[in-house]
Length: 500
Image 1 (cartoon, rainbow, N blue to C red):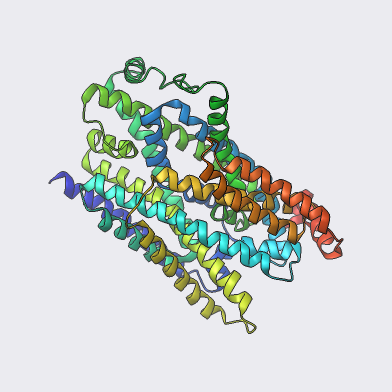
Image 2 (image 1 turned 180 degrees about the vertical axis):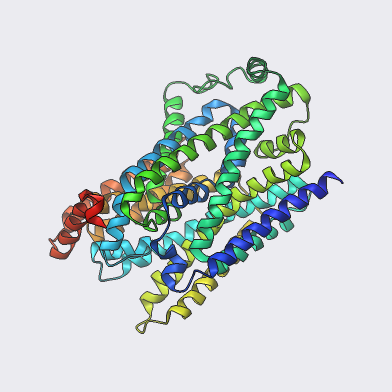
């Protein structure tokens, strides 16, 4: 049996499993809240793996190893920032958002939580949040489709467009019908596949090279600074500090990623956040360690055996095809697809919720039936997928570049508002709205200035300052807001038995 046949068998099994899980989830999806938030019934292990898998996308298996392979360990500051940010997100945001979103009129989307929490009667805040989600998530989803196309080019020497369309079609097949629960359950399988692949590939590569010491020597022969977190000396003083701050700043983005923090809202209860944090942080540590190792070890492997990739972002794909039996290699390749598809499905669901829950229902005076809302939700998924696919036909940026911009956009627009809404009583709807606009605009402007500092950091700071200043200028005490803020704090400090 040829290698290609084995690869197709592995991918076929993976695709079939994802579609089956989506079908299974569709049978448990009966109303709009089920479709958008899984009925707030996710166990901690599902929420943790789902958040991790939907977070990392094709960047984890393609973008990050590619950066390690091309530049060296200096790029690992991104991974360090992400690990710290993920932990703090679970620690600071998860339990309080789970409790507060239910206390505040059972909010099931991030824009609806902002509106309910801040009692915005103008609906401007909810609409603006939805527009930001649609703009940045369409770009973000496009990065996943680009990764899918690149995957098929590298793995099967196939056509980019065909590969991109296949990935999009399969992801749609289980997301359309399974909704949030389908996306979350498939994320669990995909998250496990990703971490196993990222551990397996570098370990086998080292075995083939011979030893850790030989691997290190080969890496430094090719790039003497590859194993230094400070780089090769070309960045010194202020430039090096900017590079390190830019990497660490990625962690700030977590507080504002709708497709991640919506998993917190879907937990069974706020007390599940602690166990979910331990599971999620462990998964992320192993996955990031594997991705960094794969990129660096790839330098040594291809130096010793030849056949180096022309595109650094396919280093893991090429290693798996070179080192493993075709069936196992096919499963590793399926893990790459898992990384891509898990994020894409979550983004499509969040975009759909923005269209249906936050824009459509806001414009309708007469509220449609639950069945109509579910149908509209599926139509929203399809519409966003089509737009993102059209943007992906001729990609003009790397996967990491596309992800970095969208990540900064969400982190700056929503991150400060999420944190302040959870921990500061005096945040107002006008302060939140001003912060979103300031954060989004700063991301675009700073990106254009090309200062060498990742646009998320200055945009996050600007948005936070604007939120505080405008809120202090527009604050009026609201007894209902005060009551909900106090009730949330009380709920989080009660013993488990009393909560139940």
